[in-house]
Image (cartoon, rainbow, N blue to C red; front, top):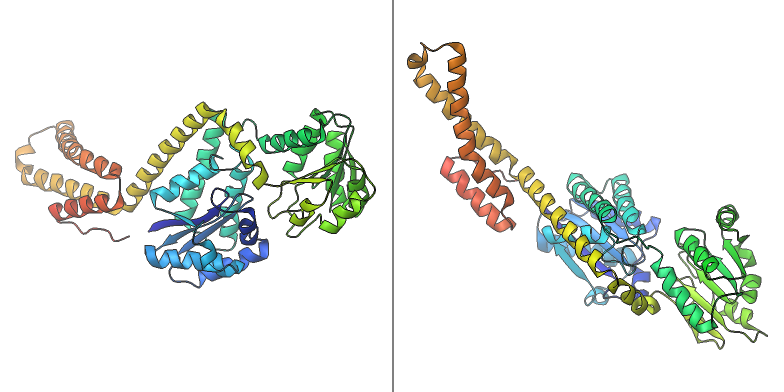
Length: 423
């Protein structure tokens, strides 16, 4: 068994490529069918978020598995392989686990410590299991990643400010508009990011906030919690015309704010409009940013601001990475123990058999002992053998590197005349 991860993230890919790679529900169904039909992939889990698209696989062999997972990414989303050549990264075995643990902890996100990613990792596994694409191998590494993310959040300050993304955008909006006090805001969407946007608008002293969403019920629920106004997307043209700042964070697959809609909203107005697009795929048509009177900022535009904020939590980041390293070590030891379990059991059985044989050989010499004395002798013999076997078993479990570990396992099996497990 080997684990391989391939992916594209905000670190090396532009938002346009991330948009093209993003998986909708129907895309996931097709992608998992592809993995089920490919003998080079035993299990698969796809993680598709605003910041990344990654596919994790349990594979029989590296080369065939790499090509198979890459085909899933390319063919499922209609991407030419050459388009992935530069930004595509891969992680194998312990490195794959370390990467996933880092992702689940929010340490690889554009918004350092973002809390959404932990739920997204958990949901990715649940979805793969629902499609019968995942199995025990990937379930183990994903569950360990979720536990790592929880530990990072409970033991460090990483993730204590999950709204840093929105805060960075609000800062830019204040710079463009000369402050947010007394301004009018429209928030498009009713999810977690939208709720954070409303909170920041209120904190910055905006005069009115209107929440618009495809589901009016959800818009009203958010508006009631935040003392905002609510409406559906049909009200967007009028709301945009009255707004000074618009923040869009929907989960829509297509454009929500078209260039034409923004152009109409700008007709006859003398004040500027600041638009913050927090969605991936983007909610706002990029060409709208060329219109006079509008400042459009999307995920790419926030990179520098978020990087500066991340530097302020260097101590927590260091502690979080130490937790990740510790959890990767523990996970690797568990995997080795499971993989070499048959060998360890065979060693212990060989030890027990040797003890039994010697006790039988000296049965007549022990015949005169009281029952409790014979029990003591038996326990002593078994204890000596167990201690002799304990050290090599522990060392083999903790030996880093699959190749080195396999070499030691082969040597141990040959020395004791045992059959080495192939799984």
